[in-house]
Image (cartoon, rainbow, N blue to C red; front, side, top):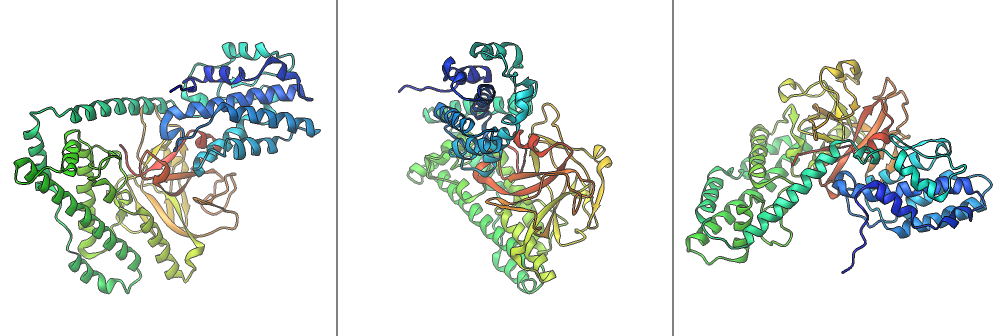
Length: 520
């Protein structure tokens, strides 16, 4: 098998991209200056598209096969468009490059946003006049630049390799190295577990006994249904239904955990024949992995649980905390003042319940409702001693990756009153080595759709320009941030959150900023 993989660093990638074209190609177009400048920016764009891959899900939430063919076809399109138009059609070029050529590979909406945002920054008239393509990297003026001069410019004009050249924060490098290390160590553990070494039987027995003794008991669905019966006729019925569904799903998981552990315990004791599924659970317990994390294993707790990247001890402790919230919630089926939304099997159902409650209370069509996010001044559950002033729900337990929210002291500068709710804070640069700082308690509130909001496959995109108006009295920018269940992103997308920022939203789009419902 012969592989032709792209280099890991951006300098080698730009050199490799530029080498795809002969020197004579620079003079074949009727507008040689525009062609050279845009072609060089295209090579840079191609390089960052390839370079983001190594940053994992923060770079691209899914895997894409960008290749040299994309760059060569874009160069042909560039020549044709420049020859056919008296003026440089910048917008048309960005559309063809981003939405058709490279966008043809991209299946995720948020990844496509990154793709098109790069072109809004890189392929613009400003690059003809020393415009910046990345922080610290200016586009050279095309006048008098030869083929070799562009290569020589990389030696003097390109800053040292860092995530900043890709629009990412320096923490992205730390996250990438942590992930690479975890993958290597995980492979070693899996190989060791599969080698069949002896002497680990007593350790497995202790793990099984501990988990069986500490696992939460199943919920009494009949009792919960009796408590729910009168409440289902009231205004909070959608929340009650969510609680019933959560208990039902948790029972399925708890029963499977106990059944599989007791079965494995008997198999290890010789009371039952060891099956393949029992052996798979044994291997998972040996390497502290949630059964089912290995895609080739049939025995699975994960497929009936929630998406997670946690190790088994952390995952099991997390499950017990989720059960504690359910215990409090189902005692009288009264909503907690602040919901730990990441602890739900189906957070989307809870967001729908918020809209249903508001729609019924105000006699509005459910299709015209959508949830909005407001970051409050509260940072702990203890601060939340009452319900929201309007229909909605306080939610806690979310984290942010790629940036941070201003802390309690910094947020005092940005306090605003929005519909009776005190909001505060702005999206700002991350601190070094703070990979996933927590968010304050967030108000998820149902609101009516605005005509200016753009419908997309992932929800309604709010206008980004700093326009004063509803929920934005000071005219800050709004960044439409995706909310994911895990750092794997991609298919774990839940909803969209609007975060205020003084910086243009393109900065955060390229930085891969997103809210996460759990850490690793």
